[in-house]
Length: 363
Image (cartoon, rainbow, N blue to C red; front, side):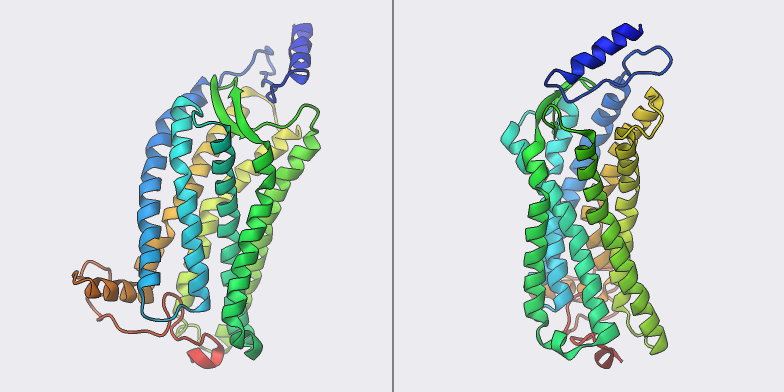
C-alpha cells in the first residue's frame, strides 16, 4: 500500500496536474469531494445570483444619487463613489462563479484570467478605499491641517489613481497563473491557479501571505489606528455626539471586516495546510473547502451591504435620495426617515454634517 501511495505521489510530481490528492491517514485512499461539489452546486448558484442582482441595483442607486446631487461631492464622498464602482465590478464576477459551480468553467481561458483579475483588483480596491476614508477622517478631525484642506480634492484624485494602479499591479500574478484546468476533486474544469511544474510551495505560500498582509492585516491596523485617535479627539473636545457622520463611516468599516474576517481566517488556515501545518485527514480538508465556499459568499455579500447602510444610517444620503426622487416627481415617502424631515439642500453629501469636517467646522 505504501508503494502504491509513493507511485501515485511521484506521478503527480511529474505530470502537468497541479493537484496532489488528499489521502486519509487511515487507509491512504484519495479523499472524496463529492460532498463539497454537491454543496457548491446547491449553495453557490442561488446565493450568488441574488447577490449579483442586489449588488448591481444597490450600488447603481448609490452612483445615481451621488452623481445626481446638486451639491459638490466632498473628499470622502469621492472615495465612496469609487467604492461603489469597485462593488459593482465585484458583483459582475458572481454569475461566472455560479455557472462554474454547476457546469464547470465554460467561458475559456481569457475570460478566466479577466474575471479573476477583476475580482482581485476590486477586493483590494474595497480595502484600500476604506483605508483612504479612514486617513481622510483622521487628517480632517485629529489634525485639521490647512495645507491638506486646500489641496484635498487634488489629493483625493491622486489617492484614487494610486489605489487603482496598486490594485492592478497586485493582480498581475493572478493574470499570469490563473487558467482553466481539470480539477480531479470535482471532476470538472475550473478557473483556478495553475502554477508551473517545479514551483515551490514557498512561492505559492508567499503569494497567499501577500494577500493576507496587504489585503487585510495592514489596512486593519491602519483603520484601527485612525479611528482610535479620532474617537479620543472627539471625546476630548466633547463633540462626539455632534459628529453623527462618524457612525456611518464606522458602520461601513465594521461591516467590511465582519464580512471579510471569516474568509481571511479560513484562507490563512488553508495556507498553513499548504505548508503542512494542519492535520491532513479528509474531514479537516473537506471542512476547510466548505468553509471557504461559505465565507467567500459572505465576502460577496458585502458588495451589496453598503447601500443598505447608507439608506438606514446615512441621513444625508436619504435626504439626497429623497431630493432626487422629488425632482423626478416620484414620492420619496418610502425612503426611511425622510417623511419626518423634508429633504434639504446640504453642503455635504453622505458623510459629513458640514462641508468642512475639521474640528472648527463641525462644532
